[in-house]
Length: 68
Figure 1 (cartoon, rainbow, N blue to C red):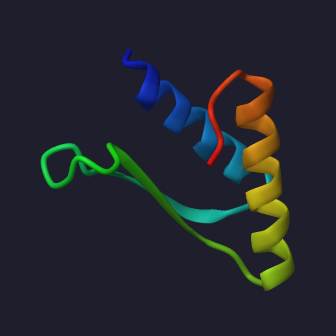
Figure 2 (figure 1 turned 180 degrees about the vertical axis):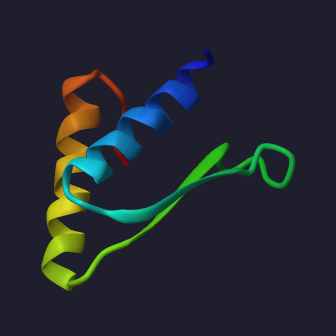
């Protein structure tokens, strides 16, 4: 499994930890050189969105991934 996809799965799982619904992982490799994967999900509030973003960043950082 490629590192970027593994990182994407870790980020998606972190989103699930915060009850993000309707998660979809889009493969953009054939469309752009800017990014390979894109995760989309549904949250119910701005507060949940902020908590999810923070949790994803913390989770990826703890795994040694670069966070922008």
